[in-house]
Image (tube, rainbow, N blue to C red; front, side):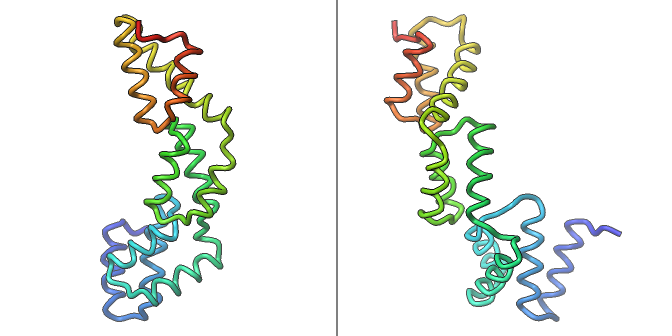
Length: 173
């Protein structure tokens, strides 16, 4: 029978009292991976929060990496694709999110190198078109301001924003 999340948490609490710290840490890490993939940095922080020592956490995360449960390169690629597709985020925002999740700069650079300028432009243009449809009845200056601001919040560069606005023929007046 399947245990509920609460029962699993309680069982990990019981494990902490009576078991090997490596087993406890591995159980905690695997439970954390159940809802979605996580970076090594996220898992390390989660284990620390649960009272696992640095040595045990690093050893367990190394074992999980060896078994293929933790792979920051694959995580960063999947995260980047998801954030581009669902949220239409820029490279800059994706890089920031990956940094927050503890992904190394080297992996972030490799991941962002896969996003070419045309793809980023298309993301920005598609997002701007949605914003434009939503504000079509407003004055031109208001539309310009809203679309420009929305693209800036998504992390797109001013140069890219200007290109998108020109292509969609959105001007301040």
